[in-house]
Every structure is written in structure tokens, then in C-alpha cells.
Image (cartoon, rainbow, N blue to C red; front, side):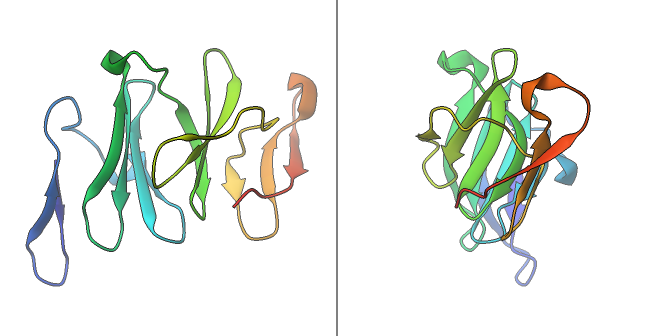
Length: 131
């Protein structure tokens, strides 16, 4: 996969291996500086939105659980692993940022995060924002 600078038409970052096929729908911008691309629980990778360089990647083959991404916001990646165990990652490093966030929101902005209803019932709930 190649990242192309729209202004110049030049490739700024190339990814090889298992991360070859990705559509724009598989990438989310954190509204600050990082684009996170993913393919289910197979791989996740983060791209510096300003330079077009890849910052980190996890694949299923690395021995680490790869999160299902639900959302991103200002340097934070929300998701879940291992049958709905929620996690929060640092978008720039991929490091675990919070061990027990309580949810994995799918809508996040500067005021709130919207995620699953507590306890697994139907519906949604509002949560505080991390980041």
C-alpha cells in the first residue's frame, strides 16, 4: 500500500506484507495528527497524517491481540479485543493507554463519547472523552 501526497503526487510511505489491501473506509483520522488503518482483528497500523510515514503496526502474527477499532480522537484509539474486552491505545505509539476504559465508543468528539449501553443491553450511552 502506498500513501500519496495529494499536492505533489509523490509517495510518502509504503507498507508491504500483510497490509496491502485497505480501503479509505478502513482508516480513521483522530482529528489531530494520526490516521489509523485496520483490517478487523488481522492488523492495525498508524500513519502520521502530516508526514505520511508509518509509526507502528500490530499484526495477528506478532502474538499480540489486534483490536477491532471502534473510533479515534486526539491521539487515542478506542477498540476491543478478545470477546469485547475494551482497550484504549496511544495513537502515536500503539502502547496501551488505559487498561479498563469501561467502553469502546464509536462516536467521539471534544464533548463526549457515545458507546454501548453499560451491561451489554440494547442502546447507547454517553461517556467522558479521553484525549
